[in-house]
Length: 215
Image (cartoon, rainbow, N blue to C red; front, side, top):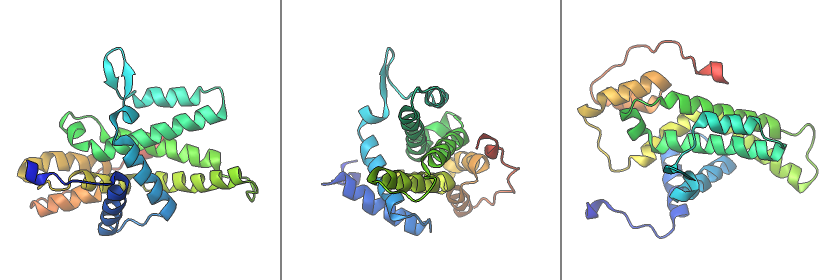
C-alpha cells in the first residue's frame, strides 16, 4: 500500500495539475476561472469538516433536498445564493469523488447530477447582471455567474473528470461492469461508456433521460 501513496507538498497545486490533465485527456474545455473554481472546491473538500456537518448522529452530509428547501426558503438573497452554491458544490464533489461507494449502494448518482446542475443554473441566472457591471462587486458577480453557468452546462462531463481523478491508480476489471453499466444508463457518462467498451461490452442505446425535468 505504501508504494501507491504519492506525497504531495501542495494540495492545491496537485489538484490544479491533475484536474487540468484529466480535462485535457477527456477533451473537456473549461474557462480558466471555472477550472480555478473547481480546484478550490476540491482543495476545500479535502478537509472532511468542510464537506460534512455535525449532527446528533455524528458527521453527515445534509440531504440535497433539505439543502434545496433551505436555500429556497432563505430570508435574504445572499443566504439563498450561498445555499444554492453549497448544494451545487456538494453535489459535484459527491457525484465526482464518491461515485464508487454510491453506485455500490444503488444511490442514484443521476439525482446528484440533476440537483447540482439545477442549483448552479439557478444561481447563474440570479447573479447574471442586467446591464454592464460597473462596480467591483458587480464584476465579481458577473464572473461567478459565468462560472456557475458553465458548471451547470457541463456538470456531467465534470463528474466524469472527477471520477477519473478520484480513481488514479485504479485498474478496472470485469467486476466493475455492472456498476459502470448502471452509471452509464443513469447518466450517459461518456467515460463509463468507454470503460465498458474497453472491458468488451458494447452498451445498447439508452432510454430517453428524465433529468431535464428537474432543470
